[in-house]
Length: 297
Image (cartoon, rainbow, N blue to C red; front, side, top):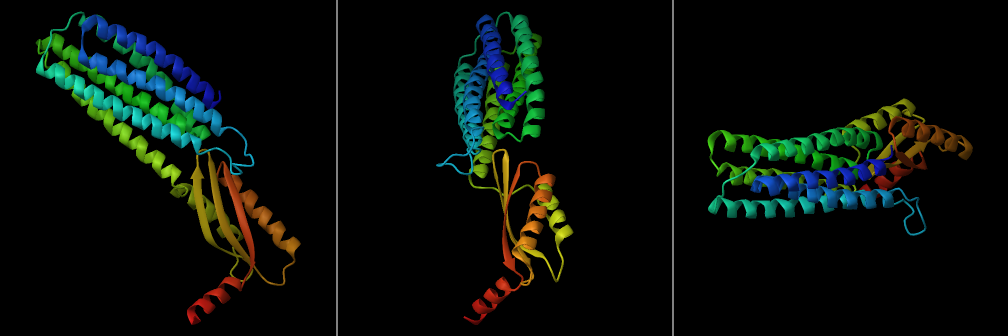
């Protein structure tokens, strides 16, 4: 399935889990279950926005966006991060009010059962989405999957707390657990914001990809005939871009230089999925001469 299909499935799953967790909250009156249901509502909003951004990112380049629309996925990650932070603050406020005015809980067993079912749905979907995100290098899909994983841990904590309330009768455990849930959600939201900001600022390729690039260039490098420098890279959603200079002897014909450049480009794009190369051809002594000029200036 395409990334958009997984996000549509995420939207449908979010609706189901909202109904399950909302019913659990209504049945028990648990503020921690209310917090869990609110996070699922954030999941729904995030999945809808992520679907819109993935659809936009998949559009081909046009006159106004010659490099494509791939960075749209970072807006999805940032938007979901903001939603998560807002949800965390709302959960913490509600839990603080319940801490001041604790109330007895009812029907905890049914509430726990509904929370477990919704958590299982989110866990299975998150596992499938993470696999697809790594395959498609989709920032939006990965962000939505990590949010679902956070939701799974949230539900697990809520279930543990409610079981603790059943075993001890300590009703203050419910708002305390909701506060812990809020702090965990806040941490995930801040992480997503940092990631989206890094992507919008043209972050370089990861170390593994750069190592592969260097290995390819080393295979073509020759101390007297060919060398490479001024290597710059950036990531934009699912795409990777790299720019570099390739120097060759001045007596080479343009056809020979262009042929070698094509081989280098194919090798680079073959070793790093989604890579786009831009290689500038230069004579061997051009930049050395420019550096001498700068030194003597």
